[in-house]
Length: 119
Image (cartoon, rainbow, N blue to C red; front, side):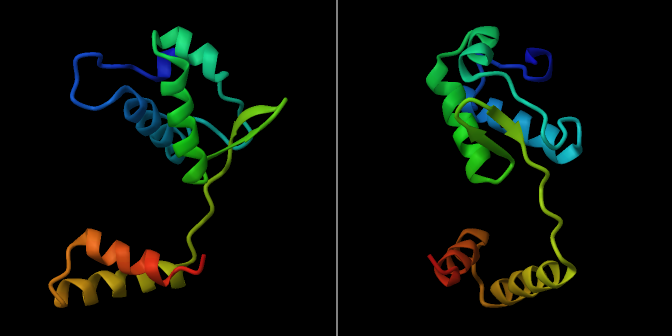
């Protein structure tokens, strides 16, 4: 697995983000497929020379993004990203247009979307 993840120890990007972003890119590109089991947190940490907490944080962020699912005893497995319906894509484009016309930043528009999302 470490052949798919490369850590730039001297880089500006924190190691957990390097792990998260590389795995996310591989999942969305289809290199890691639905149901595929990722290495254990400790196993990947050992392969990469990182602390287990660093890999655990990356896995947690991947789970929050809906790209993996972790179950005790079954490990962490890739979850096929859901297809975004055309109606949602169109609504997102409309939000972007409206936000730009209002002079909002992407962060402000995202905050408005989060505020509108029911808890």
